[in-house]
Length: 291
Ligand code: SF4
Image (cartoon, rainbow, N blue to C red; front, side, top):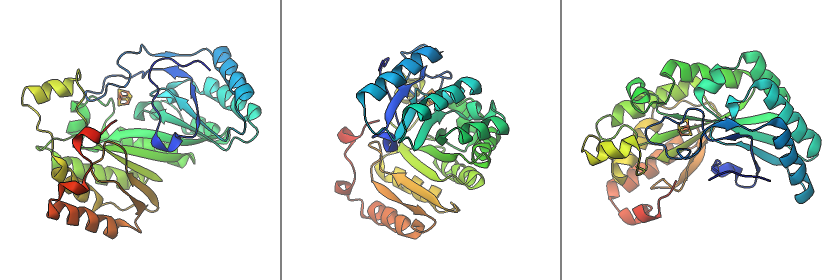
C-alpha cells in the first residue's frame, strides 16, 4: 500500500482500510483548512490503485469497510470510480461498505443517474463538509458553493440512496456572526435531512487566512461557553427525521452524542446546564483539543 503525506479520515472510519485514490483536495481554498496545503492535487492512475487493492488483499484478512481518500475523492470521474468500486468488491468478499469524502461541487458535477450508479456499485456513505449554512460565511471561507448549491448537492446524494454524513464547524462565524451561522445552518440541515450530523469546533491553524484575520483582530474566536450557546442555538430549530448526532470529535469542548429527534431535549438540557454552571472542568481543556 502506498500513501502520500498525512492521511485524513472521518472518526467513524477508524477501522476501515484507507485507499488513497486521489492526492490532496482539488478545491484546497477554504480559509480555515490546512489539511492538504502541502499536496498538489492529482488523481492516481487506475492501474496503481488496483495494485494497492491487490496488495491489501495479500496483507489483510476480512476487510469489510474501505474509505476512499484524500480530501475529495468524489471528484474522480464516475467511470473510474465505478471501476475502483468493482475492483474492491470483487477483491474483498466480506466488503460491506465504501465511504468517501465529497465537496458540494463534486456532487453537483455528477448527475442523479451517476450517483445512483455509484450507489448500486456499492458506494455506501458520503461525508460532506458543509461547515455553515450562512451564505455570507460560505463566501468568506471560500467554500466554493452557495447555500442553495449545498442543499441541492445534499438532496441529490440522498435521492440516489447514498447515506449522507454532514459536518459543520461551530465557531466559524466568530462572535459577530454566531447566531446567523447557527440559525442558517439549522435551516440548511432541515432542508437536507441527513442521516448523520457531526459537529466540529473551530481550531485556528497557523498559516491560514483565518489565522491572519485573528492576528489582525478582525475575527473574534468564541470561547468554550459561547460555543455551547451556539450549539444550543443550532440544535433547537433542527427538525431531523432520524439522524445520528455526534459532537465527540477531539476539537469539541463538550463530548455529546445522540439520535435526533429522540435525544434533542436531553442534549439541550446538558448543554444549558454546563453552560450556566460555567464549570470549565467539564470541558475539554484547550491543550487537549485537536483536529
Ligand atoms: S474542501 Fe475540505 S479538504 Fe478541501 S480545502 Fe475545503 S475544507 Fe479543506
